[in-house]
Amino acid sequence: MYAYGGTVVLDVTPAGRFAPSPSGDLHIGNLRTAVLAQLFADASGRRFLLRVEDLDRVREGSEQRQLADLAALGLRWAQPLVRQSDRRSVYETVIARLTADGHTFECFCTRREILDAPSAPHAPQGAYPGTCRDLTESEREERRRTRPAAIRLRADVAEFTVHDVLHGDFTGDVDDFVLRRNDGTPAYNLAVVVDDAETGVDQVVRGDDLLTSAPRQAYLATRLGSSPPEYAHVPMVLNTAGARLAKRDGAVTLADLADTDVDASDVLSLIAVSLGMASAGERVTLDVLRDRFDPARLPRDPWIFAGAP
Image (cartoon, rainbow, N blue to C red; front, side):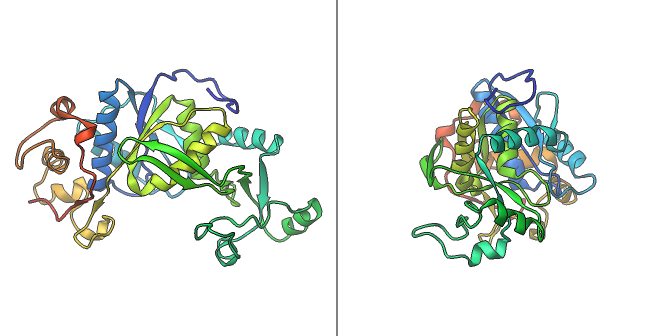
């Protein structure tokens, strides 16, 4: 539990997690990360949780298909299943307490205004320039008449360092990032930190495209009185052009691959081969992979997926 929590936590024993967004079917890159998240958790004696991150885009039927695909690969997760859409009041409680303690401010900037604003020296492109940080109450009142406000964290550091199992120490920028969007939706960076803290997640395994988000989230965890999790940002799966894998790349989901006579067992074997944990054509199960799993031997480069052989 952490200082800004507002709910009773039933189980905070150490856990890892996989947290898909139900905006479409999982592709083989997502499935590979899910397998690794399960293996990391099992190898360290942690529970394995599944969280549905459904605060934003949701496509009807996606959650059910995602759960079925994960189960088909042999993944097993502890109950109950957590859905972020059921936890809005928890996020609002945290924001309210941060606000009462003077740790937030209203921001009326559009994304374009932030991109066009002069940046502080050495600040990364798109970093929040502090435009609304020190507005007077009369200035805020005037802006409220024309547009709704987002809520930003009043950060007191410019950068934060996390340790990653695969990448070592990583220092990233921290700005006054959004906690609640101006449409009232709790922001991703807030929700994942609150959820992890309240469910005992102290190990986060996810794609290395999210490594730059880790310093903000770890910093927020400390501001909320919690310890940052152990991170393992694993290599992405890319298409033959070196871009992120997407539906347009053909048979990349379990359903698409099944149409080409590649079943879930075949997909798990392909994933195992890509991780150096099986030989080509070898049939494996998650139990077999648990026995072979060694984080130190995982590949550090992306897997270029050219389709099933």
